[in-house]
Image (cartoon, rainbow, N blue to C red; front, side, top):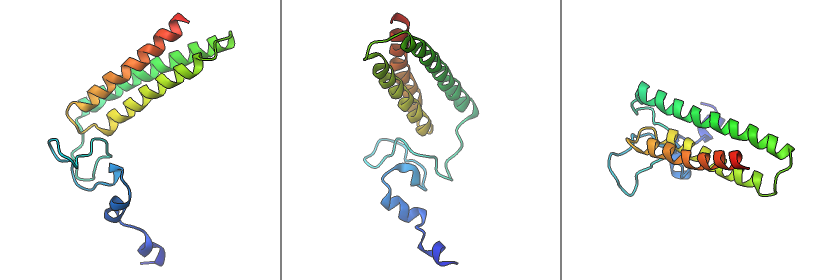
Length: 136
């Protein structure tokens, strides 16, 4: 073992340093508890999510992304035509909220209902973006 390999922290040591749940090496506990991590990368011994579940989540997220691209194209045309100062920051804020919720849904894919709740919540700010872009 070289000196560089000996000085590198192990996953167990890194879990004590990093507060994010991506370093967990044990499966998530079932039930609500004080130490439960809702958003984490899957551990090596976690079962793979079902194919249908992953496919539906991916299709839902792709539909949100396609709608976001449509809003972006419409906003670009509107900005070229002259838009108020508030237009771009408001669309950006709601778009980023939607993207953050969609990312959270994939990080919580091993939870029973949380991914669906997060994707449903991601639809709301995107719908507001669509309305603003369509009505302005």
